[in-house]
Length: 124
Image (cartoon, rainbow, N blue to C red; front, side, top):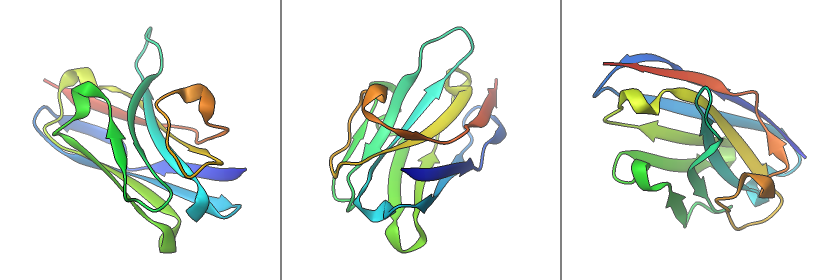
């Protein structure tokens, strides 16, 4: 399994932007599909975005389309989540996850490796 560490979270005003990073170590990260999920207090974990092993295909949750961009740099073993036009409802802990498949999934149960999460807080 890959070991994942998220960074880049913080507090931002509504309309602002943040870029999250997910750095991986361990097994060959370049063959893993990676997803971002988030969880707000009292809510279930929600799919945010995912990317194939080669970065050629991506998927987004409905409320993220047009605002968030997922990308990866396999040379740096890192996946990024650029979040623009942030809203207070985007406030949550954001997690990256990796699965031993070249294809991504919107289902959190399909991912075996998880980071510890990074807090994103959007103020109105």
